[in-house]
Image (cartoon, rainbow, N blue to C red):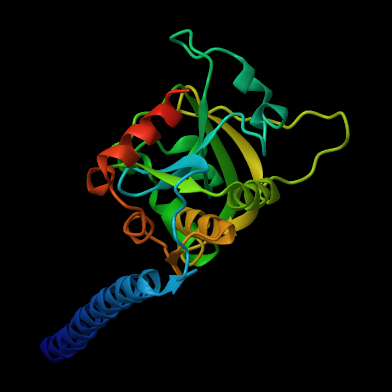
Length: 259
């Protein structure tokens, strides 16, 4: 009798193990399919243009779009006829560690905890990923000062008409919540020594990423850009590489960035 009961329980245990194995395979296959569908949707979405008729002008305000392969940002002159960013970010009046005053800022938007506490992929906690995937996270605007940034494969210059640059400025300003008259904007430091981080509007989700923010901001200025750009490559493929520009264009751009 005992042996029969034992064999019966063995059969139940085996059935449970089989069911669990099949469930694991189903979940793994479903997750893989979901990831592939997301990647395909991102590729399609980033290939559908906005502002198809836009043509880059010969003259205007030179900005840059930069990427580290995962995150993109917009590099802007500190001072132009349209905007003096020192009014919003007084720390730009301070010299950089090398002694030079900032000439440009790199502006990026992203998830608060990641911007403040995740310097590398190895520091990204599983619970943070799960939270972002399921419910997202609050946005943060990161501002990094530079002196005379050099163009390159990952720092691609782009020229805007003054009116287009003014629209770009307004879009970035809209990402900053208003502060009371006379009150200073709270800045948060992080693992990036020269960066300052500021509370920002919007919520980071899988559909509204840091790169989507850059794509939307450039599109709001009138630049041709993909409709949905959750990945860095979806943004950068719309920005011409410096090596593909004419020598005259590069020389003019280098002079503008060196001011």
